[in-house]
Length: 474
Image (cartoon, rainbow, N blue to C red; front, side, top):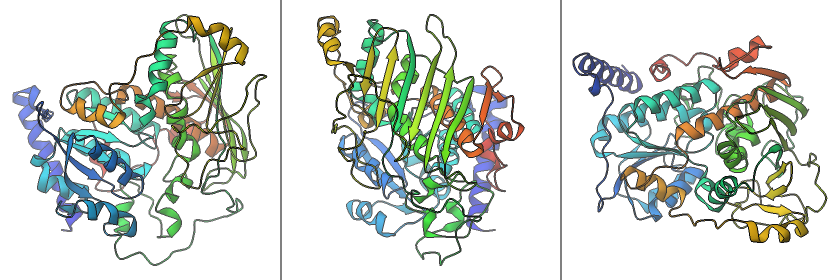
């Protein structure tokens, strides 16, 4: 029996014991999470310790609210993991998250998950099943069904604290958007333009490829089999799959939309009560192919009337040659310090920076990404409205402190799965439309695509590989 099969059997045995206990006392089915006391730090295990994962660990640790008690990475010891290993030299290290939980589960209160998109889901499901609070980088999961199961798991394990890592959702834009909606400043929105036109990793690749990249020597530090996680379709190792390159491929990542959508349309999605669209159409896909994302994309998401709010379209633009139309009086697109540069380079002032334009029946707003606040355009209208704008409260905690304080019972998270999973499902639908370069008609109640059988099957995706099936049952 190999170590992964052993860990799987331990997980299944624990699940069977919990189910047996639940037959006698249903309240024992879910492990009860521990809440740290007022003066205690949260014992945090970190899964994914390089690149973005390392940044998450640094931000969580900087709050002063967490003890780092375990480090886990499938590429442990690789150059991008060295910084965290040197910062926490005495913390136990693991390559397999399942072995980490087997050996240290009683010492862990919460986990941070900063791994490729395709691995978010099984790790999160495993942690929640053990009663561990979870901070998961965006997008929440790769497929529509995975997001659905995570919502169901969050309802089942209702005492587990959940937070998706769209960190701007705890900054100024969150509180301003809510205040402006509550005050009736933002109302009757009929259209939103969302744009992210900076260089992406796959720009410059040949879209005429007919296969995945050739096999290369697997680095000694990397467990390539485990890197695949629950993905049944195994790929030969190539450097263009790891260290952020996974974002380029439909099999592993969510492209520009999944990467930046959660930083651009998150507040509109929540405070305009958008839910799921009834139609998604990819109207432009330059360099479309079956393997990696287009060089540029335009995707239209159509949402129905909601209570007293009118129907609304969100049009997403990505790609260097695919700038959206700019309304009269827009002004300049400033370099907002709240917007971090993409991994492919600095944001250039001469281009339109990531953000959105919001059109209502009376007003037009422009805004950036992450925590960037909105402004009313043109400037003359903004001056006229200045005296009517409500006071916006300051954030009591950043996104990382918000999560850890929630683990201590002091706050509620601002991007729990009940909010972040439907947002991530919007991205999943958009990626399906990109992949198939098609219009998809979606039944919001039954949560199925009605005009494309293949797309409807892809809401769930292919079955997980053997040994990972348990994560797809709630």
